[in-house]
Image 1 (cartoon, rainbow, N blue to C red):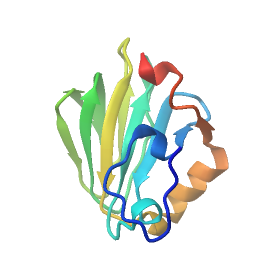
Image 2: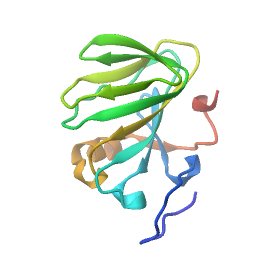
Image 3: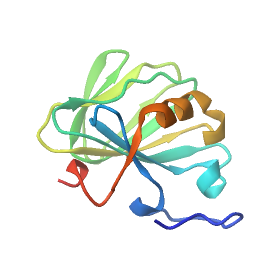
Length: 146
């Protein structure tokens, strides 16, 4: 893994540059790539995520807007329990206060990019959840590559 050097500006992130984390149930993987810690981002946090085939994603509601870009696969995006079919190439906007998640009822992995309008160091509840129960996995191996 390439380490971030203090005061170094980072403009490009590769999959091995930040840890890949997996939820305790193994259904979703995430990488927190663009943060104030990794590159000095002041009002943006972003990364990549994957949802295992035939599984549900992680449900969230935030006080900030979030957007997603579907990189690979298909999924059902649920916004306040209303389903929307999404596929590679789609962009999704989720306004603040909207309960949301992605479900992957299909046979292939789903991969997306997410970005939210908040600084990582201001997201204490998300950091606490991730550090308490998610574990690091090897990004060069696993179902997300299928």
